[in-house]
Length: 428
Ligand code: CMC
Image (cartoon, rainbow, N blue to C red):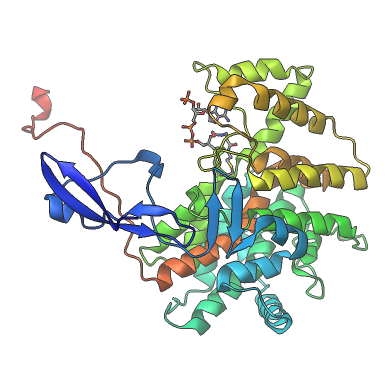
């Protein structure tokens, strides 16, 4: 393999270095392009073909449907690890020993309280506010209560900031739900595991003894693992770019939550269940929705289908589909929407429009069905995604700061008016 790519503009040739990743992905390094060409830039709206960084966290091969965190396959992690182990792996690069995991968990627990005054902020929201907006706001507000800036060259300070957000974020997520549900705010119970405690914080009723079926905790744990990182997606790129201005971890994550909220990204899990419900109300008429999705005059898209990177099955969707069957079976739930989803998937996979565009079900297609079976309300589906993605955002922010990446600042090609003279208001 040659070490450079040759670019020719107006008969002049420029040699640009090639970079090869550990999985043999090749990239043309254009860092010097503007300098050597005297101002030529590249354009790639939506970054369909542009790498924004080198990263050692997650490997994704969309053609072959491969997803690995730090070299471990998502299938193996979903089967054998728990969420906190995966969080540690993503953030610190290696699977923890038992002692490291215990310390990590106990440091997180020591940070799992939120300043009582945060409740006043929550109190100001209307009950009907979407919990993603509330979560983004409360996460940003954490800065006011933890104002010390983090010296990113200090592993200790970095570690303290990480356990703080890992400890407080589940509390805020659960509170966003409790506010909507009209339940008193709860701190859970630190003698429980991370995910079980989150479940308690969400659902514990003040006048009931708390207990939960282990199957429910395990299913949530698995879903969180499947969402934990996905390399340079929209929200993660947002976290990195906000953090690249040296804004702190909490506000960078708050920005990531806002990016995740959109229906083309994490908000798709809510949109999928709403779509499936609408199909059910329409007597299960999947054909009508397939036609709408293919109609270029209609803005409707088949939610939970398609992916920027996967041009094959999303490996997470495969795991979630099996998990949806298992969870519903073991909880004895018969959700007609699962059958509608399976029928819709089959039709789409056989349809030439979807085949030609390589559109497959993504992680969000079946996740909502499981969340619903677990008793999680539909508006909380995307906050659940955020809770799962938290370690990924942290790992990516940490990597970006420790690699001393420059501030994110894309170029553009200007297509507006060229210079013109100002006209006084009466002359316009
Ligand atoms: N339904 C119908 N047509 C679609 C869909 C869909 N869900 N997704 C893509 N297409 C078509 C699109 O219209 C385009 O057709 P044409 O070539 O004729 O113009 C072609 O497929 C390529 O689509 P694109 O919009 O250029 O692809 P993209 O990489 O920019 O978008 C996507 C990726 C995920 C935003 C898009 O597939 C989509 O909107 N899907 C539905 C929303 C969704 O499920 N999002 C969750 C993504 S996975 C989890 C996550 O990221 O959080």
